[in-house]
Length: 48
Image 1 (cartoon, rainbow, N blue to C red):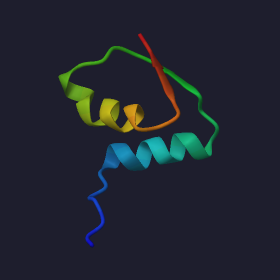
Image 2 (cartoon, rainbow, N blue to C red; image 1 turned 45 degrees about the vertical axis):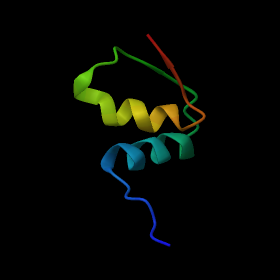
Image 3 (cartoon, rainbow, N blue to C red; image 1 turned 30 degrees about the horizontal axis):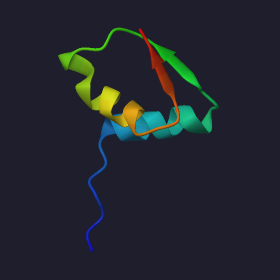
């Protein structure tokens, strides 16, 4: 079985989790869609 591809956004979210980040504040949009998807699959909460 092949491992799913990891992108930069996934790596960034993994680093944030390791540092203990619980919340991220920002404005969602097309430009950061990969990051939003990575955050969605993580324990980090995104606040608008």
